[in-house]
Length: 278
Image 1 (cartoon, helix red, strand yellow):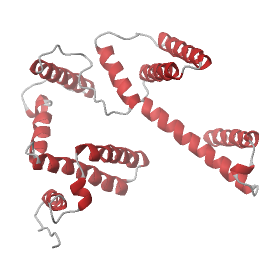
Image 2 (cartoon, rainbow, N blue to C red):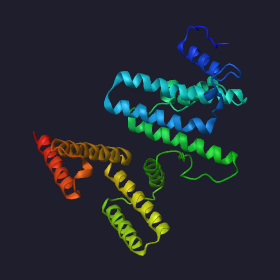
Image 3 (cartoon, one colour):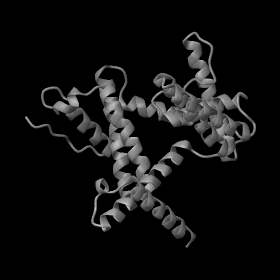
Image 4 (cartoon, rainbow, N blue to C red):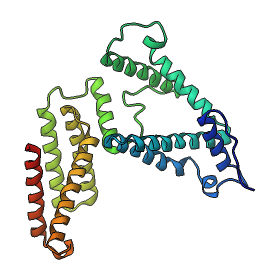
């Protein structure tokens, strides 16, 4: 028997019907039926990154498709939850609608005094802090300024968010020089462990160094994830230039020495700098 769907008026209803058909025991897709929250979560994260990639490239057609893929991930999770009797897609939509209304009382209520993006950011953070405190109370524990920072975030992003939370309660340097000094301190400690040969200690000190670098990015007003993405993209451009230069000589990278590749790398750097000045 082949699964079929009717054509409800709203596209979201059609998508929900498709998801239900994919998960229908006996007639659904074996792959979709085999999935659970844990197995789908990595795809959800991947789709979110692909949305960000389409935005960075300014590709609106691609963005439309990637947003659809991300929406499908929400529908997938909601369908599995509905099957387990936990909640439905409508519950998800209702919960976020309620949250948006409660966090924008200046739009949907009678509260005034919010006339700028900065004021709204402060109001938003205050409301989230109240929500975290209420949640901690229900769990019978004292709330922490660090509550609610998702473990699944990219490591650099989570480090920055943790640092921001600590800074809001005054645990932060007020100037940049001590932050730079901390980076130097952590680098020196890593160098010492490299000499020691202790792999576990090296990993620990490497983590401390990355945490300190994320803190420096925050103090300088830069997103560490974006900075690293840009650095990686720059490496890719220059490496492609090295490949092209050696291929133009009728050779492959495996035929070139590190010194020769380094010469082409430096030439690529010079060309980029020249082009940026023109």
